[in-house]
Image 1: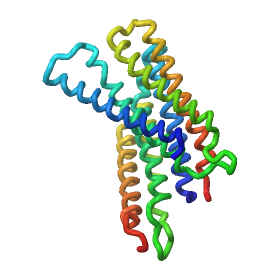
Image 2 (image 1 turned 45 degrees about the vertical axis):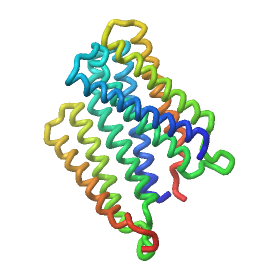
Image 3 (image 1 turned 90 degrees about the vertical axis):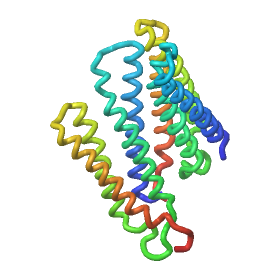
Image 4 (image 1 turned 30 degrees about the horizontal axis):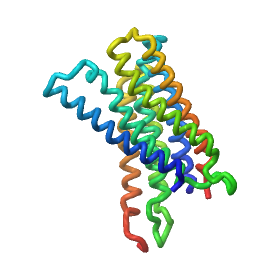
Length: 135
Length: 140
């Protein structure tokens, strides 16, 4: 498994643990109410499990297993995927913390833009790797 | 394909069907009057789909396909992996039972405890999966 996939997948696993923890707290609180404030964790829970865990895991596994090139660097230009990694995680943190801590609205907005750029960078990387064998 | 992966994927497929049935029931509300129980199904529908289907499928495929942990324990701890499977599914089933009941009667004591146990069970499943998978995510 390439180093970049290790970073993406281990970060995804960390978000899985965090996302399940937040979800568990909210579900526990729904059954045995502790404090209404737990409901404010919902956007962060969704952000962590969708973008932090599921999408990041897919990117990490995709970078690892998509067909490699016969000539040149085996997985193409890795810089786009490093950029996707940084942008995605900056986006997840900006959106989730921005909503939770009621930061100015432009911070979650920038976070969403970062997530969009992350996905675009990953798609640009992956596009030429979706090909027949031997190319 | 390991036995546990077969259990994960077949269970995931079953949840996929059940989740879409719940989604269908939610959609029927717009054209027909259904018992109040159906008004409480939305979070159950989302979680049957995202935990029961998507997450469970990922858990099963990761257990099968990720790099070996070691020569004598290629997939890490088998006991922890089975515990993860049961905790995830018992927790999800308890949620599917308890959440509509709490939605109908917020003061229902027993249903509240069902949700609390469900929360703890799914949380432990998530941590168990992370603990067993972490060491298998490594450079060649």
